[in-house]
Image 1 (cartoon, rainbow, N blue to C red):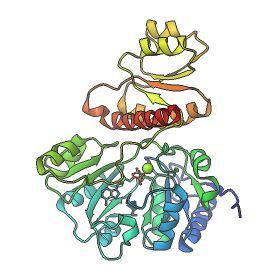
Image 2: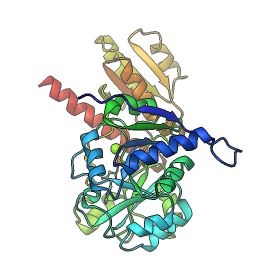
Image 3: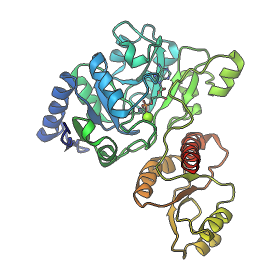
Image 4: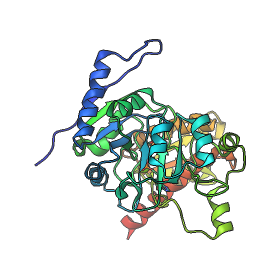
Length: 360
Ligand code: TXA
Ligand code: MG
């Protein structure tokens, strides 16, 4: 039997109000009631929307995997209201995790630490570690505190799709597969949290994200490794099972050619309808192409944080336009662009697979 579409409840905490409005409290209470009976609630965070269930309820967490179509081998991030809740889920609390919690939480960084007994296997994909994050969105922390339980929450999209940065994106992707959407407005960061493995020394980034390696090194007071460095040095197996290359892909095929102006000229000449994300919209060679009816130019900021904040929302919007191709200027070879580059590489490789699948 088809389920109805979920309610979308707006939640707000105006800047100078001491408490959220009664309507917001009611919405949070609805969320808590659903979570207590093992249901699924989409929640806003500063990075992307999450699809939450009670992390300690195995059945509820199984519902997340079903709704997303997510492989059971991909473990989930557990969201906590504060460091104390995080420690209750950790078998050990490494110094690096303590430093990150003290200096960067609440915020867009997830620590991987040894797990404790109450964390069900389904959350960790049977592994001995658990990923923990305290999100910056104050109403999501309030929801977790009210629920009195940590929330397992992957990004609220069907597996391998683009992460949602608005409540509307969640509705489009998961629709009647979930029980409620709490709409806390657009996500400020716009890409998924930095994931850092704190069980190794030096700690190692598993997924680049909004917080740079420099910020993490400052917080832990020592070096932090990139995945390739440490894997190479230790000859160790891949530690972030969710990091398959194909991930975060829009439906429209995406590429990041070295010479976008030239490439777009070719695509247009072949009658391909192109959406182009460019930081150089004002350049004369770009303006020269702008008259083409086959081309939608989306000017993007040349600051990596601002670019990340808009990236998924822009890709979602272009997906709606039924274009043939999305072209993105290749980001600069600079650490500050590492997270954006990572997401674009994945998006392009997903598209490439889709292209060859439909070709063949
Ligand atoms: O910003 C975010 O992190 C968002 C919001 C909702 O908090 N969540 C998110 O979740 O991006 P998800 O499931 O889409 O990505 C979780 C990532 C995956 O790459 C997964 O493999 C990794 O974290 N992960 C989870 N548990 C892990 C563990 N124990 N060890 C290593 N990697 C882990
Ligand atoms: Mg995801």
